[in-house]
Image (cartoon, rainbow, N blue to C red; front, side, top):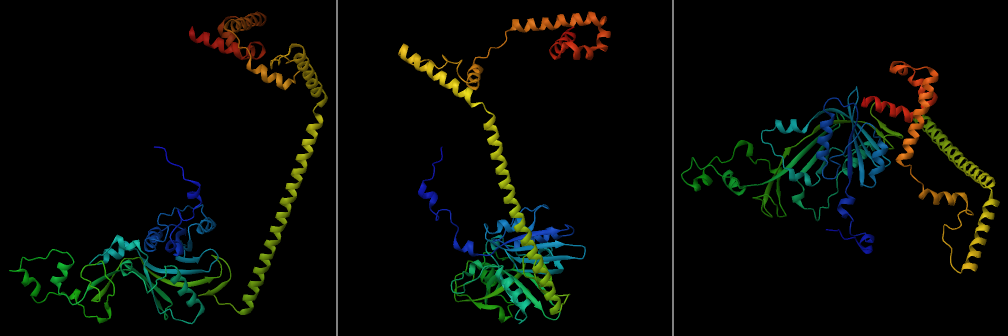
Length: 462
């Protein structure tokens, strides 16, 4: 079937193909890798993309030829706000987080890490739910309440990487994961963890909990189902609910079984990975460039900072000056090019003989008018070809160009054969071997390409 074209009003309507406000305002991210590709940096990058879902480019394809400018140029169209870079050097692995498009940039050194597959395989009870990755995780910061400038900047950077939550109308069914960042002031290290959240009912025996959650109970050791619910020792050591700090009162209706509205439930966390230990090394004012606001290893005095700022300003002014000179040179070259073009066009018009063309056109007009006066009819188009310009005559004659007949072609071939016999007698060529030696000499002097091809065809037929 032929697709119907959209009307003009549908094409101009901005509400047809517009994205929802929740999607456009949410922070998006690019996670890429730079430098050496040794070790597990590729797998760690994939795990971090999985963690940042759904507001990240999961299947982002990057090449060695791509630069940071390539990602920055397309970031605005895709609503990307953060750029995360994993880089591997001979010293170690680094993790950089930059705010697009103008910074700031935080550089962390990855002291140690564990991949998601290693974390999940080490657990006794593995819990990986794919539906949990349809919504962004909850960010939790611990011990980031410092008055230092770099600590405040680091806390705000991590908070802005994930969507904001409105406590008045938040849906608890969408909060299925959480990211925990714990800062240790004594070592200046940050523990990065990723968990899945599970809410289970409180005050229910093990047997009742299994039936509520849809699991099939094992009644092989029971005479009756009532015995399964009432027997003692139904709680194992791993399922003891002795921590009252994990108990909450649910104010909404949850999808999980056994959790009742306005009822008591407990929160359980299961680690998903990846697991990282980070250390802040440097804070830059721009995107991977600019004034160094904080450095963990290098401390400079105010005089050194002013000197660096002065060099940076002079370098920036020199760059602007060169740019202006380059633009002026570009405009000057364009003007010169246009002037040369105009001069060449004037010279071309001066060399054309205009008088002959005008005279021929005037004569042609006189003949046409005379024919109309005497005969009383319009002349044919091809009647007065002699008085037309040569360019017009050639266009007409191209259509009536005659092709050579087979008889004329044979005459031309015999002509070449007679010439060949005469040259053969002059040069004293006898036999095929002697002709073969002087073949190229004869070909270049007299015979030509046409006869040479014909002679080769005759030899093959013999």
